[in-house]
Image 1 (cartoon, rainbow, N blue to C red):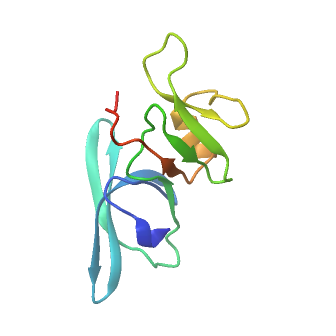
Image 2 (cartoon, rainbow, N blue to C red):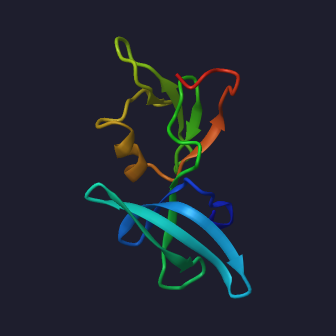
Length: 128
């Protein structure tokens, strides 16, 4: 998974959730430059060596998150989730192949069901 990290991916890096600002490769190896928000302001951290033994990096979402209506996503357990707008709502959420919605929304799914992979998206459809 680390070879596929792109700008905009949401990561879990040991103690904090952050966003990839850039990925660089030098003679010393691959490095992440990450960003996180602290009380409304953006803080940049990096470079972080991707292969450091003490640095645990997990991808939570791919760069094409959040889900759109009619998307098909797969969670870290291989379960399929479908992008839907529940009756009377405008925002997109995911509905699992087991027939359930996330209890507290998409943020809950990011933390409990990652990493996520987009299986299908109709790019001809507008993202609304």
